[in-house]
Length: 148
Image (cartoon, rainbow, N blue to C red; front, side, top):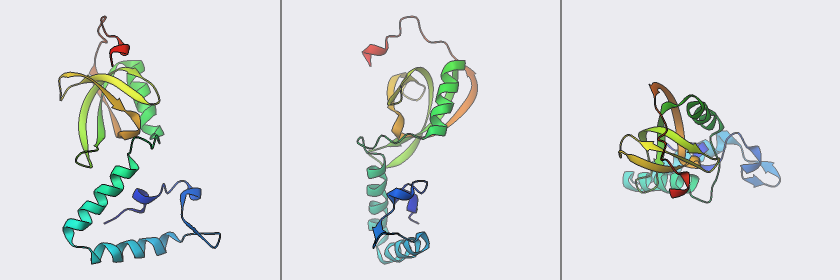
């Protein structure tokens, strides 16, 4: 099922569509979305969902999950490995990664990716979830954030 949060940010009323200066009715939107969803073939339905997700996590959308970012900061400050849900643009799916945060900004997180066994750069606006683990790590002395 489509989630209206994929189309608009439910916490931001100003992002909702307006008609005659009235905020669109959420219940009405859900009904319309369900009707459209039922009328589409399954393959088209999935394609539409992925297109909407890609738009949401597009490079030009720099919206950061603040709760997730606070957990990233906590992990960095305490040097704890985190498990993240990272939105993959190619598949339009969220993939699990375990990373050790070596450097962070509001735009990017640089760290060791346990899946790829290499240092990688992650766009913070594409980090969907963050879970703190009990695993400790140490930032290598030769780490240079400017190489990434």
